[in-house]
Structure formats: C-alpha cells, structure tokens
Length: 266
Ligand code: HH2
Image (cartoon, rainbow, N blue to C red; front, top):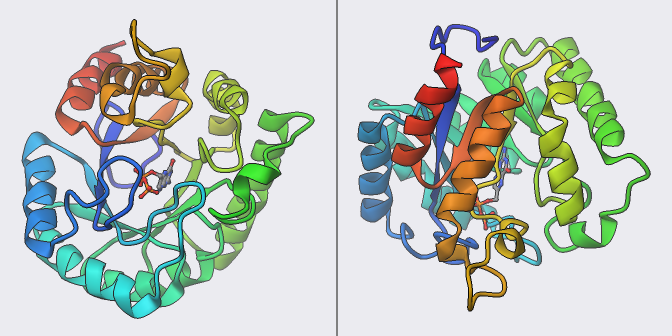
C-alpha cells in the first residue's frame, strides 16, 4: 500500500471529529473541547489510524466560520490528541492549517484543493479532494459529461502541483457529496480503481452522507435519517476499500476497522 511509512496491510481508517455546532451528522456533539478530546481519544483507543479534526462544517449551504473562531475550536483539540494518535486538520484556511501543524497535526485534509503550498512548507502530508465551488454553491455545480473522467483529470492536476511543490505524502479523494449528485457518487465509488491509477493512495468519505439515505431506507423511512445510516456507511466503506481505497473517513471507527481487517485479508 502506497502510504509512505505506514506498513499496514489493511486499509486505514480516519475517524471524523467535528468540533462544530452544525456538522450534518455529529454537529454539536463534540463542540466543547473536553468532549472533542474525549471522543478523539476514544477513536484512538478503538484503533483509528488518523483522527480528522475539523472546525467548520462543509455540508451543503453551511455558513463560513471566522478564522479566529475556527482556531479557537481546533487548536486545543489537535494539541491534546497529537501525542496519542495521528491527527489531520480538516480546513480550507492556510492559517488554521499552519496552527494545527504547529499543534501536532501531520496531515492537511484540504477539501478546497488550495493548500498544497502550505503542506509543502510545513513538511506534512496533503489530502487533495475534488470539489467545485464552496459549500454554498457546490450543489448547483453538479453537472458533468463524464464525472469519473473529469474528477480524475482534476485530481491529476492537483497531484502534479503537489509533486512540483515537493510534497511526499499526497492522498486523492473523489469528494463524495461535494458538487456531486447521488448518481455521481455511485459512479465514483464504482470506479475508484481509476483514481487509484493516479498513483497516489485514495481516501474516500461516504460515512452517513445524504446519498445513502434513499438507498438504505427501511420501511417507514423515506429517506433513512442521518442517524440510521450506519449499515449503509459500512457497506460503502467496504465497497470503497474493495475498489482500492487505502483509507476511509468514517464516524463509526470500531465497526469499520473490523471490516477493514477482513478486506485486508482478501
Ligand atoms: N467530507 C466531509 C468533510 N471533510 N474530507 C475529505 N477528505 N473527504 C470527505 O469526503 C469529507 C471531508 C463532510 O463530512 P462531515 O465532516 O462529517 O460533515 P460536515 O462537513 O458537516 O462537518
């Protein structure tokens, strides 16, 4: 597996930790620093390979968070977790990324695809995710002739930029739900081998996302609500790992690690 120094033979698991009041799934649950740190440590004990700390929701329509507030939310949490588990910082702001790296984060999870130079300067890894526009505009930009081809082409540009900047550890991520319809997300999941062919490890985040709702609705649900998407999320994670994802970004770490162990045997 092309993950630099990591020698594990199973796909990796990144646990989601949103220090926000408004994230689509865990918003408000870990908004206090103490609660966030406790949840991060819990995920570390469960075996998460990375804990992804974010202080700004990117759900469709989300309001931007002022920089000072985002720093206030994430920096103490990163500092508390970094001695115990690998931490990534989920941000689009250069100053937040830099402060998080100073606090111990070693991976910049960049949904905007704009922070390559920050990662290069800081000497840390970078996740290049595909999206269009921003959380306010992205759903109006979900139009493609060939979604897999266009996402691969954009990610190839980002990888080339990262290589030119000298970043060693570069992940590519199709950005499920970011300027994508449900059909686009499914097409990308089915074709992750084409993303993997870019030569960089693939990260996929499907956990609890809205496209799973209609597909996994039980009798009386239409669609499955966000707190009833665990099984669909696990199925999507297994599907992604089977198609070549080297890491999955999930809310339910323990269950996903069990699945990852099995996939790693295959
Ligand atoms: N999805 C979300 C946020 N960050 N990063 C990567 N690399 N890939 C993803 O698919 C991804 C991501 C959205 O999910 P979540 O953090 O749970 O919610 P919110 O944006 O509302 O905080």
